Length: 391
Ligand code: CMC
Image 1: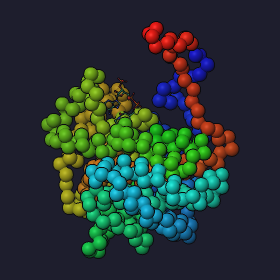
Image 2: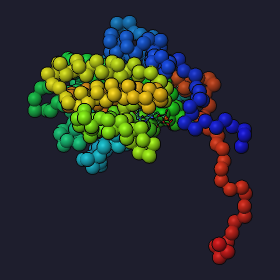
Image 3: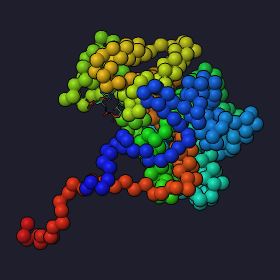
Image 4: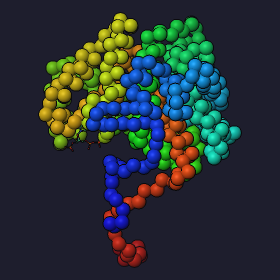
């Protein structure tokens, strides 16, 4: 049993080489292809960051416009897939629908199944990035009983998603530019995050040569958990449960109590032992959206107070627990009008570019092998079968 390194949770195992994303968790640094996340969030767009992740360099104006046109070409879903939705209960969680529908794409795009061909891989990648907003918006529409809206390719990637989600056929939908910008920024903040659980899942699934749609469906399944992408939904639910600032100390005590499974959702990270740089941008964006929409939400005050109290508490200081990307995102998404059940679906939508970029990187790696961890066996040693009447 001493033959393998025992590393549960892969806390010290590098599973691959990657040129996409760099994280320095002690310093709170996140770079995509070398560019700091703060600069990308401030100056770039989700389409531009997607191009950067996929191609390694920022696009020229011409390259960006061509890329946007290419993505737009794939925004529609096969009409047959609308029927697929109708098999779900109306109260199905959007992530349940996303797992199913994205996996089902495998059954529709037989023309791009040869993953050894880079052209095919590119087409599949573009399809996935383009169709995710349509798929997520349809999951929402289905849950509220409104008709599905077809994509409108005259809008931006994010504007189109907002319209497909909140528009209705009866009247024109006007995209609020501040909301569009804020949501686009949220997508940038979620685009990639090196070898997190869902990305590792996509790579592991892809390492066997499985088709990309199935691999992304696997990533979506993994993302759903509350320790990962599901934390954005759990964090907002928690803030609502806390309700008022005077209740915060009680929840902080619960989070510190080892006999209580409660954790502060949206707090702590495997890699960041400092402030998550995405949470910084997120907190700023809350204020911008509130101002633009002329709304406030008492839950934001709870979040700010909770952060302040946790960051001054010895337990959180000692364990280096800081707010992560999921702590403030829910406050913005709910101000925009998304129900909490859609939060993780939005995370999946944005992370798709990271997943496909990482999958492509893996398949193009000449040293690529099927992922096959070993184990430390703890079961019985060999023994003889005992007939039923002797047991
Ligand atoms: N509240 C209270 N205590 C915590 C928390 C928290 N949110 N997070 C970690 N701890 C404690 C934990 O109990 C442990 O204490 P001890 O060493 O005494 O046993 C210590 O801090 C280290 O935690 P861990 O669980 O061993 O660390 P990990 O790297 O395995 O887990 C994590 C990382 C993100 C799963 C965890 O911090 C957590 O469950 N956070 C809440 C869920 C969350 O916000 N997830 C989103 C992650 S960020 C982006 C994303 O993937 O969506």
